[in-house]
Amino acid sequence: MLKVDGLNIAAGELPLVSDVSFTVAGGERVGLIGESGSGKSLTASAVFGLLSDDVSAAGSVRLEGVDENLVGASENLLSSLRGSRLAMVFQEPMTALNPSMRIVDQVAEARLIHRTVGDRAAAHRDALRLLEQVRLRDVAELGRAYPHQLSGGQRQRVLLAIALANDPDVLICDEPTTALDVTVQAQLLDLIVKGAKERTAALLFITHDLAVVATVCERVLVMYGGRIVESGPVAEVLTAPEHRYTKGLLDASDLETVDEGGRLHAIAGAVPAAGKFPSGCVFRNRCPRADEQCEVSPPWFGEPAHGHACWHPVGGDA
Amino acid sequence: MIKLESVSRVYRRSRTSAFGPRAEVHALRDVSFEIEQGRRFGIVGESGSGKSTLVRLIAGLDQPTAGTVTFDGQRVNGRSERQLSFLRRDLQVVFQDPMGSLDPRMRVRDIIAEPLVAQRIPGQEGRVAELLEAVGLTADAGRRFPHQFSGGQRQRISLARALAPKPRVLVADEPVSALDVSVRAQILNLLADLVDQFALTLVFVSHDLSVVRHVCDTVAVLRAGELVEIGDVERVYRSPEHPYTRQLVQAIPTLRGALSGVTAEDLIRP
Image (tube, rainbow over the protein chains, first blue to last red):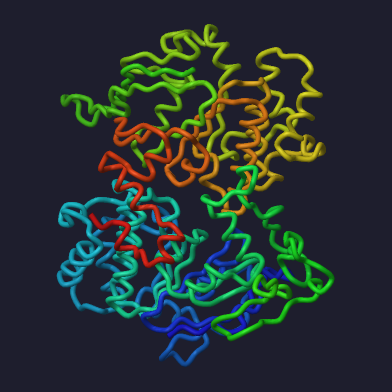
């Protein structure tokens, strides 16, 4: 359904995302994990055609049934796809919703603007139905509210209702639950999985939380320093990681395993600022196994959909 | 060390109608517990649970509507700022967003020395160098400004500042919630090192029970201003007694759970 090939994003001379390739099939749920500064949100913006003017993109983003490459496509084409075939749920619902428009009208607008329905009354009925689908209560009354009158979890449900309004083929969720309470997060994750499943949409789920990705997705892409460093089925990548960064991330987030001193297994150092990543392997300045070989960029080892870019993979230790 | 007896805090909303009564918000209702010296005490709750109100009351930054807060046998509430100097020295707080609590116009060395200046404690220069080292920052970090640091390093700066007056109690309000996973591990380790090294009593506030389980030995669970459960953290996590705590534990996605087949639907299954 969605095929990204050799995507490069740069701000002038500064590379931000390098040679990112992946596919998401209809009905498949793929996680994109990485820490801040890894390029995961930029990748999503490129797919959605929402990159700001000061960065440039090259490579290809293809949507099934659309002949044109979405990278560099006209705004006309992109805006006809956004909200209909491509939908996105952002992290910060307050900035994604219109503060001066009633909730129900914002959902109805999504139906009207793409001419999915012909008249306002039908759009309004659909909007109420969509709000019910994301399990909001008393939608007739709640629909008349403005975004600021809702809780964070409710706003995020409204965004999901808007995203699902035109039964998209591709649903992108960018850290949709990061700011939410755990019980609210659990409800929203369930709604996202169900919403995508019912529409056999291709789901690209972006998060820094490994446990969330493991709960929601079947496949995972691990990003660091603007590159995909490892990819594969969740059950394999998160139990037997190959790339040293994936291993480090897993160890650091495991709160149940500590060393002799009772301390967590942290990754040394911090994520460098954009453009400050080392040449060769982007992780080598923080990697316990780095040597001279790592000064050369590692190639991709394995299958396109299941492999890694590490000279000294964890599995090679055996 | 810290004792709360039947503490309630009621906020009054601003008037929405000229004649109707002002709406009241019960941020805390009749909360009582004691934090013993040397404990690593966790406070867990979701938004609106009253955990931030609780922090402000413990730190003497707000007054309860009813009940008493005592610190080391001395009453905290109802005292003037001048009478609270013992608390200002012995109890320090670090907040979630280090950028919001570090003055952007001050150099790091002045930020760290500020509690010493405020309490007229001499020997500031040597103490700042000591603190920078204790939190894992280089000596030249003192000359720089907060915006020149990453989120994790800024949290190190606020820890150094908190430890400057040699407090006995450190209150950490969501100190790792805004941090990336790899940095979170570093800061949690640093926090554990500092608590050991300086024999601190730790009050750790978080919405994340799994982090509290790693850091603390005791936990209090708050919901809508009420204390619903308190006890040994391992006991509460493994066999929660209150239905709300059970719901909270169940809703936390875990890697182990997910890999053994727990789905998003299972997290909310009643």
